[in-house]
Image (cartoon, rainbow, N blue to C red; front, side, top):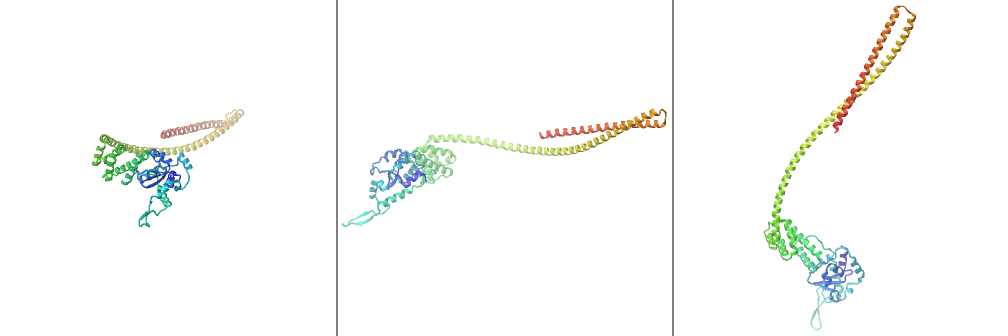
Length: 417
């Protein structure tokens, strides 16, 4: 329950009684004045029952309840808070003494009792006390606990009630309430049109009544009919009503209908073209996806091939490194042998030179020694040639390894791009 509505149901701080066709409503002048200029001028300045009450028989109690719950929607305004603080917290019979006296003359929710008088006549006597009457009025006031809702009307009875609320709001110049009541009725019409054909008898009855009597509904109702034109144009009674109520609107609607049909036809053609384009795009997409799958397979095959090539190259590199190591070992061995042969040759030369100094003859041993020296020289030359060949072979293997590595790197870089 809204904070403001609580003051309506509890009558706390009330300072005015509105009497509608025998029913009492306890309200606050500040709230009434804030929402309704008409009641501010009439009810808030009433002199009935010493200014305590105001009669409003032109509005039914059911409608007045809805109007009041609308006024008491939301939180408490600051201006109302100050008036509440200044209001005396007295029982209603003390706050409204003239009304209390007026209740004595009324019978509230009870049948009077017939009393026989001494002269032989009889009269009806109210058996309820004023305290009981006040309690009944308070209980009825407490029933107004539900705030005014903005939901669409659900049936013909609610349309009737909201139309009365619309008329009262228009009469009392409560424009926000008038707007909401119209929206609830129009929403009911929209729901009926949305349900499709056949349209109900209530729809036709209310449409005829409202369009003929209340001009405020003409524009929103025609707007609804324009939105549901496929349904409207198939109901001859409704189309006849619309044409009679506002020929200009109806003619404009028909023009819009023709234009809308043409635009719909064009849009359908465009939609068909779009569907065909979508089919073509789907076909192209499938082809591209198939090509991409084939390309991916090719890349995968290429990757596997390069992986194997790299593995083989790595094996060849390791084998070549092993061969290079062996060649280097062989080269070092040959170098050692060559150094040893050179050293041996130098020793032989020295020995030979010494022997030649001692022996100046053609001794066969000298010739033999010379021959050995020659053989050693040839051996050294052969060793040197073998060493050069080993170096050349080693250099060739290294060069081939570099070329193979560069080729693989170039091919892998192209693949990554």
